[in-house]
Image (cartoon, rainbow, N blue to C red; front, side, top):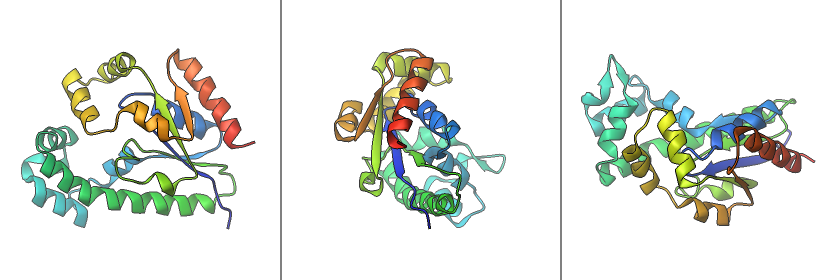
Length: 199
């Protein structure tokens, strides 16, 4: 079975991780987003979903589905509930990533397995990857990007508080991409790094 190189793309909130992941995907990587896996797992009908309802209460449901904003409002105000939720979610997410990795290894076309995973270091998973890429952007640039996506500064601060500082992530990563220019420049940097990873 083909052993695919496995890389993690991490960084602060709205730093440009998704853009780097998308460039890698366009160039032939099997790319996945840990946050999207969380979204897929958040179904009230599953065993995991039932445990989350027991933890958070039925008021996080809207029209029979989990409302992620209601969940965020509830858990970010209470570190204990947030920790309990993460204890439920993280093992399920990591298992799904491993399943997708095994599937990608069977795919002759994939040249790299890339995972966008914001809380990589926070959950101690960096050693599960052949390389870690940290995407760095200024606080101002990240805030602006986050606002454009329809979120508040308060939400940005709340999310950043539960993460390591971006420079700490960059100091531990094997590769760093500085998102300090235009969108096109970020894409070019991502493309160059992809070529380094796939000589």
